[in-house]
Image (cartoon, rainbow, N blue to C red; front, side, top):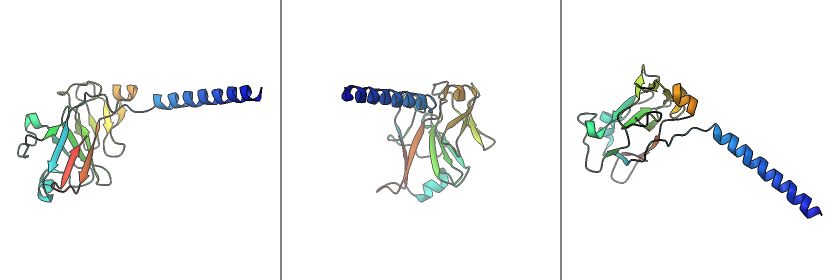
Length: 169
């Protein structure tokens, strides 16, 4: 008899944990809405980073290979800029962060967010806004905030064997 009561309590506890996990996941941010696309952008040396990278807090740059943005960046056959392009920013501590430029609400490679007055990124079509300097692509307003869609994040690595810095998935 004790085994069945104990099993019943364990089952009830498991159901409670499962429901709590589902409730928490409903409040999470979906930052993987965009179709997967290759990402690899390299900076060969510190000089290249000083020209094309971010210099510190609140600085930002856009990289879109097919549009040759920035114009003088040396894209190679191994350069890939994700689904809509790469937005490279210096967060409030000056640490580099990278996001896909495509708006996750619109989910089109040609609808790209842009940095407005240096404080957040905004989609020109749905006007959703995203925090890019402190909360890693978190949606602030618009349809993205209603649906919980954040910007897709990429990794920035320093100190590779043959490159100074690399942005990748």
